[in-house]
Length: 273
Image (cartoon, rainbow, N blue to C red; front, side):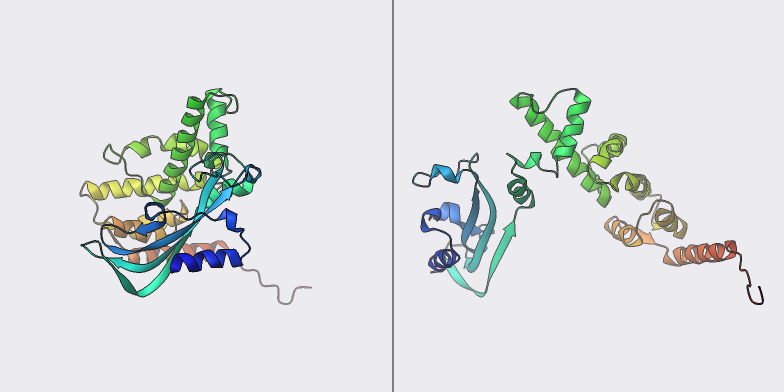
């Protein structure tokens, strides 16, 4: 019933019937696992070559089609024996791929060539002295991997979450290189890296057992010197099981206010002509 309603709704929105394909359960029925909420889904594709027609269109042809949006009509609960029972609370679970939408709007051939990642690839290409546009398929793949990974590393750095397979030391070891290249990803990343590394150093002390509480001075310094927001400090500390001396922080903030006030000379202009 849901599938029929979905199809009729799409047609009412102006989508030609020949643009709609009915797929089987393997492709168009989403489950959260062996058991749990599930339901049929509608997948929305963008066609880069509509001039080819639709009589024998293959949605698996990723040179022509890209799925960028889907809707899951969550109306069943799958039981252990595989049977389905109606959910008491039905809903629609929907999602859109940001990178895929960027690819569509920017009219590029893949996600890595959007402005989300390509500036990194251009820099890597420049450093490697290999033209991306003239590179062979393997080299282009390598560029894409580096670009995608570097973006992920910087995103983790910004969160202060740089775990690695070498006891948490791998990403910090290459942080200097990330710092050099970070402005190609986000203008404000480079300024944040020193604070992130300082926070990482403090959290490493927690792992060694020498830190159980972050001092007010450290929290203040992270905020005042490194621009590390107090809320982020609280979040990272909580994740690592470290307390924060907020009284000490408040004292440091008050001292700063007093020093700032004292640094300003008050001039009385009353009676001046």
